Image 1 (cartoon, rainbow, N blue to C red):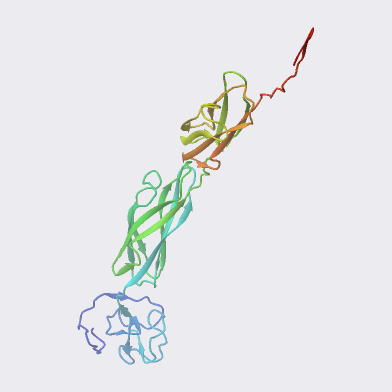
Image 2: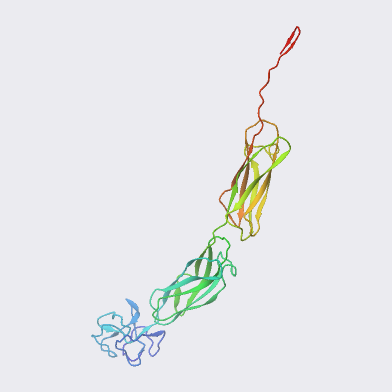
Amino acid sequence: DWGCGFVAEGDIQGVAVGVEPLGDNGGPMTPGGVVPTHYPNIEAIWRDIIPVGVNGCGEEMAVDGRGLPRPFASACDSGAVEAFDVMGVVEGGTIMEGNNGLTSLPFTVTLSSLPLVTRTLFYTTVGGTADVDSDYLYRTGSVVVPPNQSEVSWSIPVVNDNVAEETETVVLAVGGRERFWLESTEVVGTILDGDAANQIEVVDWFIWEGHEGATTAWFTVTLTQAAEEVVTVDYLLTEGTATAGEDYEGGYGTITWQIGEQAVLVPVLVYCDYDVESDETVLLLLSGAEGGVLIDNMGVGVIGNDDEEVEPVSWSVYLPGVLKE
């Protein structure tokens, strides 16, 4: 401290440590505009006060050099305050992914109070569930918060596509300097998928059994739209009321849609016979879809009975002297 003739405990004479200039809001300022002052007001640690009558401070001054009310009626600000810590909160935004090009994923830092000098935040993309290059672009850099501004936003480029995906996240590592403290060192941004998931469903079938040999029925498994990427789903042919090996041939495998395809057929070999029986069912069970979403995981095929039960016939033969039935 110097020039004010006032010394508080802990002051170092003639040394200005961490002094920040005040803005000129029309209030009285000491010559030169910036003068290191002495002790901080405990009730408002970001202000320095000096007694009335020192350095031209008068009781008629209702505000200090920044235009803020004086902390006490008997004191005023001389034109400078000591450096103080600023707290900040960084928040990640949420966007809907597009189909081509790039989209901006916003992030915002909000300060707890107006800074008197520039504050700087540093950030780097460090991961999340999204993949670098295919879902977002790697970025590292800094964000400057100017004096008297409490909020600043910036963005990370997101790569748009036509692929149906789960909601994904991008994580930034963030940090401040110059007495700028952040609530958290990591922040998460969210990417919602803008592509409707391709839905998988099964078309049921009915076929007459036939009498000899075998015949083929087909389950049709469809997508709601032509595949824009390879789509797969596992299947199992299993018994409903029909018996595998007697009424049909069971099996399992993987159904695959190549790009541009929308429907795939799954054959079912049905064995014919002359047995009189009820209609029977074969089930197609689907699981483990990749690139699509199952909305119908079971198909039902019906083998219709086309054999009729023959009524027994009574007959009589008459021979001379003999009657047979």
